[in-house]
Amino acid sequence: MANIPGPVPPLPPGVAGPFATPAFLTANPTFIEQYRGWYGYNNPGSIPAGTIPLPAAFIPSWRAANFVRAPLPLDFVAPLLGPTIPTAIVFPPAPPLPFEIPAAAQLAFLNPPFAPRGIGKRPANWRGNKVLGFGGQGTVCLWEWSPKATARPTIDQLQVAVKIATPTGVGDLGLEAATMMAHRKIESDHIARLLAPPKILTRADCVREGLLPGVWQGRINRLMMEYYPHGSLDGLRRRRRARNFPFEELTLWRIFECLVDGCSVLTYDQELKMSSVGNVLVPAVQVPPLRTTVHFDLKPHNIFAAISNKEHDGMPVYKIGDFGGILKVDSNPLNVKARNVWRVDNAMRLQGTRGYYAPEQFTPRWDSKDFRTSPVCGKYGTATNVWGIGVIMYQVCIPFSYLHNSQAKADAIYTSAPPRPHRPFSYTSATTGETFVSYGQFLARQNYSGTIKDLIAECLAEIPGQRPGLIELKTRIRDNIALLKANGATSDKWYDMELPDPESVRAEATDIALAAGPIAPPPAGNRRAPFRKANLKATRGWPY
Image 1 (cartoon, rainbow, N blue to C red):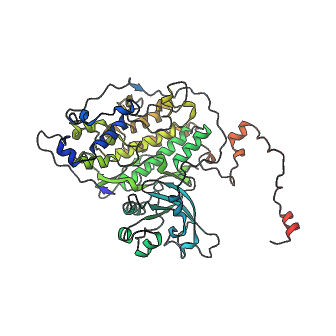
Image 2 (image 1 turned 45 degrees about the vertical axis):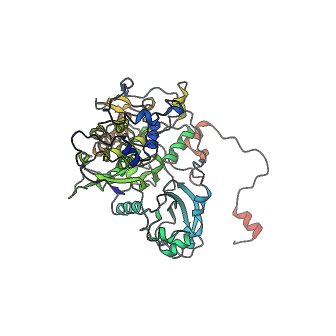
Image 3 (image 1 turned 90 degrees about the vertical axis):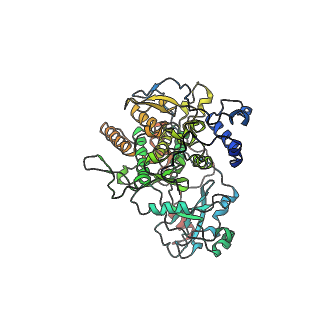
């Protein structure tokens, strides 16, 4: 969790920023590679693979002229209602396919030397079950308390998610641990939790886990976190897509609210509260936080579904997790701008996951002379988190195969992807009447109200200052939830929001399956008879 210093000192008169001089290129040897990477990010598929500009073409003009916006598509006003779409054929639930196959290096973290320590008398009582996910920063594994153990762990969970740092990656998880430890003091249902304080590696720990003591001793390489058995929002989105099963609009509003509540903790160190008459209360704090936490890796994969509570009307509680990609910035947006040090600015632009960058990171304005006075470049803050909320809601809205119609096949690949940086358009919100540049060209095709599409498009505004604040978001979301409920709208059934569980809900007993007709009986053959205690008593004696 790095900090960006406060106000940036002004440049000398007439100096606009670092130019691609020979001295600059010598001091920044990765500049050409990074420039080509950002060029390809902002222009995917629009040029032949071998025609990315050569240094001789772009170096002389880099940051030599002010930014000029290229012509945008025709203005777009979201209709009040979505287009008429044929009724989708919804398929019964099926066991989800694995999204990523762990390699041997990840599976090795399920071995006994990596068992959780400090939350049970004997680490040997923990059993590695499966790899939940992995990335550049680490691997997350599920560990379960052995049913044969005679004692219980020192925590109230028998399942824990353990994140282990990738030895060849970022290494230390200390910054993420510090963030999650601070969140333990905050009353919130919308932030993923640590179950125990992180343990600093000793020399014995390093030897046991095959780590170099000179590198790892005194550092943190694992976090013991709550396990969320219903998986991530991305997993739910993919399961619904496989079933061709759109979400009810009330469900979308409730997911929207969970995301806003989680991001409120990042900005205010607390969730936004409601008054007795239903108004959102401005957080009453003695000293407002001087720094705002920016989560650069907000995406459906990092939103986890927890068990519902009374405030969520049977819907899962969605929690923000994976705090390895966060930074602290000044809470005053006027004090946050591009640093004018290329290596620092580019490192900030690369925070998060490629494909999920915010306009503050990917905008081509970075290559203009006036990048430091731009309303977009480097303007990180709460608005960056709001962009992440918009991206998640955009993806949750459009995962369905009936969008793959007779239009250009190239468009089909975008129906489940985040908004693309090379497709900005001018958008006029029917709700507010304001016009702004936004992203997410497939949003208009969805059969949801213009109200929710307007709000998502506002979150995806190019200029951070034009995105709604958290208090406005909370207010509009609560108002629309109340309106939908008053009009008799319902959310999705709970068993359509969670992982298939054969012990509680059989797939053939769901409303969708019953409406589709009877299920064909299994083929005749040698089948095992139903289990009966009488059979056991007669064949093996009693009791057993």
